[in-house]
Length: 282
Ligand SMILES: [Fe+2]
Image 1 (spheres, rainbow, N blue to C red):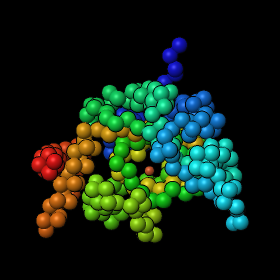
Image 2 (image 1 turned 90 degrees about the vertical axis):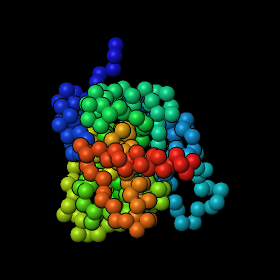
Image 3 (image 1 turned 135 degrees about the vertical axis):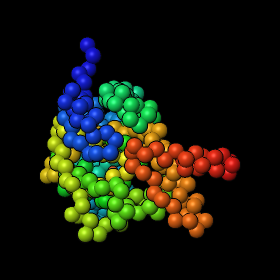
């Protein structure tokens, strides 16, 4: 029997109405999925390569003996199992490296592939991330280069999403540094930004479409939280990225370039120019 769809027809319609520029709350059926229980995720952490795991071991006692500090690998398993009171967070990255999770990711994104292809071109670089966090954890203000849908599996969180075209929040230089690999992951925050954000509350069975590069920050609720982020890149997002990198070249030459446009503007000329330059540079 085929697995039930992750997104019911109404969620597909809501996604189609929003993609690629607008956030949208979608319903999904993955809460309670056996691959997303804490036990399964502890096994996943053991199966992933070490460089695909990032975690904060949480509050260690002040006087802990060196031999009692958990080894990183066991540390992450323990952290996942004790996430309710670990005061911690775990990010499992590119979970598609483990076959069952790769199949889950392509099933989930396969349900939306036709909508995506019609607007921003073929889906590329499908990647899944799982975030496991203790009550009250905060993910600071930042942005990501992927198209993203964050599916809440367990616990709740509020993701506050900001406009992408407001260069007071996210400067053209921050975009360019990001594409040159020089960007720190968090964006500078100022209290005056707060009024520009839209909070979305996520509970098990809801998901949020987060458009490419929309700045956001996340506050977890009072329960341990598990979220699955399904991401992809598109021809449109690659062109935007390359146009930003080309702008960095222009800026270095003393020119103040115009920022790439939002979809449906295609940014092709600058993207092609940057690709040509990259080839010349070898
Ligand atoms: Fe993010």
